[in-house]
Amino acid sequence: MAICVAGIQLFNFRWLLSHAQDDWNYLSGAAILFGTYFIWVLGPKSLSSEGTALWIALTWPRGLESLLKAKAWLWSLISTGIVALVLCYAAFLFPASIWKILLVGIGWFFFSRSMAEKSVTLVSVASSSGEQEKIPAGRRWAAQLGMLTFSIGVLTQHWPLAVVGIVYSYMTAAAMWQNLRARLPYLYDPWSEKLPPPPTLMHAMVAISILVEAGALFTGIASIFVGRENIAVAQAMSYGICAVLVSFGVWHFLLGRGVSNHDVWRWGIAKEEKSEPWWRINRSRVVAFLRLLLLGATGGVVLGLFARGYLAILQHIPASAEIIRKSQEQMAKIPNLRISFAVMAVAFAPFAEEYLFRGLLFRALDREWGGWHAVVGSAAFFAIYHPPLSWLPVGLLGMANALLFKKTGRLAPAVALHMVYNAVVSI
Image (cartoon, rainbow, N blue to C red; front, side, top):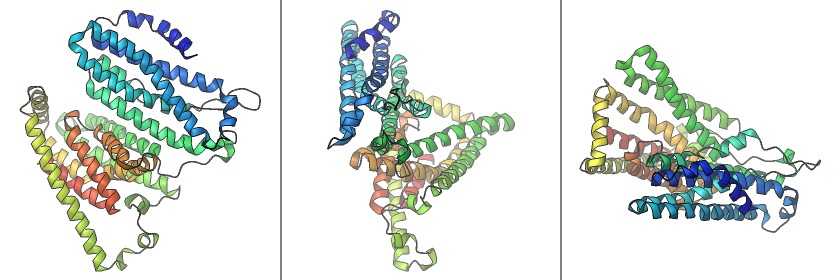
């Protein structure tokens, strides 16, 4: 079946492939598009053809999860083999770009795995009438997030966009798999289905997306009324307002699902300590808490100085130096931009971003992946929401705060680290 589907999709993509030999990136991008489309078509078709037999796997000792994981791995391997042939052809035609094509191949290896796992989460079973259950539109829409970002990044040689596509697809796959694991035992009894315990990865990703999109929307609306000369102030105010509203909205949403604010701001703290009123906390606990804040602030200074040194090194590299110079020239044209950015970065961003990226996202990802995979994954997702040149220091900041949050059991030290880091960088 896989060979038949591959042949059909090659026929569908014949026009694109025939016009993709002008340059290596067009040919490689066409291969990625085909591989993505192949997984997206093969996965659901394969699952629907076996839906009537899924009840057998539900009785296996290891359950259905291992079977679906194996299917995802098989689909990614088949698609990788096909894409690899096209990439080898591209390397033959354009030997001078072979190292770039190799990087695309490595990126595809990881991207295809995440796409295959997302495709697996669309599994459904046959109804009593023998018809396949319809996949909910929301689940199908979620599986498509980031689907074309990687290929578009390769086609346009916009490498940060390609990296964003890989990271976002992996995170979406983890979020969808977390939900799938909770409903797997109830495929034939959806009325008894239990949702995974909140906060989930999907909760965190939706909240982060709302913060980013709402901030941009509010800034655009505000700029119409305040004019370009006050755009910096409008941006800072918009982000601050959105940070407060989104954080409050998420808090209210989670509270309705039995998750208190303490459950987000603390990690592994005993219930009796969480419920103790603040006026009864003894002096030793206050001193310990202040030490944790000092630890976070010290880490912020160290990472902030590293970021400034990293920026100084980039200014001696021609390609990055030109990007930094143009960015500084554009910033200089906007009045009060530096001050507004500093206020936004120190007063609002640390609270909202630590609440969302560490309190929600990292906590949920730690339940799904655990260990260093969760630390690095949450830091990578945090980094892609920042300018590409800052990915290294911002990624280190995300890793440090994830570890600090888990080791200390409190989110406050991570907020302190984030505040001091932003203050040092924005001086």
